[in-house]
Amino acid sequence: MNKKIYNIGVEATMEVIGGKWKPIILCNLRYETLRPSDLQRKIPEISQKMLIQQLRELEKDNIVTRKVYQEVPPKVEYSLSSYGKSLGKVLDILCSWGELHVNHLIEKGENVQLNCNNI
Image (cartoon, rainbow, N blue to C red):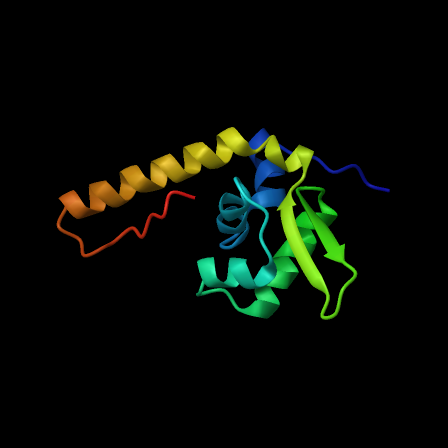
């Protein structure tokens, strides 16, 4: 088996949490356990198929845990794993910078809005 080589630490980070949807999913799971339908409501632009795919990848990387309740219909919940919680500071910084950036864009006169619900 070939050894995986990273040239800088951020490469390893981005391999796990990179992309359009994973950081958004993780920020929504920072403080609460959510069902896929809850995540779908919080991230209306993501398709159900993409949401499930991203959650499965995050679960495979031990970033989120999936809990299935044996009831009819089945109930599934996702939360950050202990290992995933180690991303807390990174996620906080990403969210804070995003808020700063939106304010910067507003100051420049751009028509943007941040629907911050203090997750």
